[in-house]
Length: 307
Image 1 (cartoon, rainbow, N blue to C red):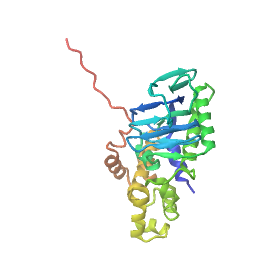
Image 2: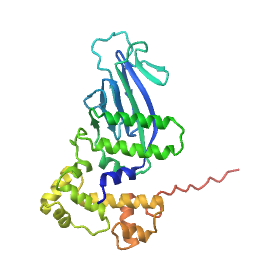
Image 3: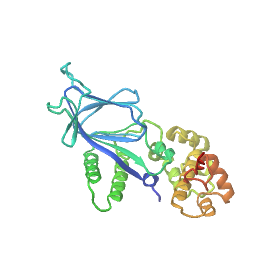
Image 4: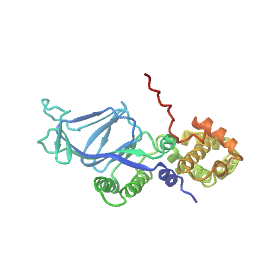
């Protein structure tokens, strides 16, 4: 049976456009504006505090891993209680291949690896359906080791580097998401998959997206009544069942169109539409552009020089 988690992570096509090693000493603080891109951090040594988008801060310890799908503003700061008020917490110094925050001569009270993620798939619906607003995994040394391997690969120039990086980042996402300490407080796909009743129905949607599913059939696979299934699905995933099915079908269609994997009729058939015209109408309504235009650059009319 198809594994929805592995299928979606693979479709996201993650890459690592930026990573760095940093440390902090004494009283230090980093204020980031962010650009909405996903980023992750793993604490190698010491501790820190992290606040995202103005929310209350969380304490980070050694081997803690955090993944933030869309950080607009963040603050990472020291936990130091007794600090010299003369120190500039925003001071930044380059020490070899490491960025030092705070005191450039003191012993570090934190070391961290930070990376920014990019996704080859522009389907943000998939990203935000899968990832919570903040994923915090505590004390998983294997994630720390994996992040170090990813940074080494990114800094090198070995054959097949991009393929290896993509596979490592896929593994990083899967390991973080399925970790026992990841937490499932926020609604999302992961919470639905771990629900003993909803998990089978979600897997069925992924296994056979072309089937003309009804709420009754999906509720039957979950061994729940129609009304209980609908309410539980929406509560656990944040989406209605048919809304999720439509989102997944359109994600598949976008992927096939990007890869030029089949003609319009074939794509329509594979995601459950009886004709290319019915698929085109549904796709245009959902995505905002016709499937024939999806992924094509906007053609701009060149300006005619004036004399």
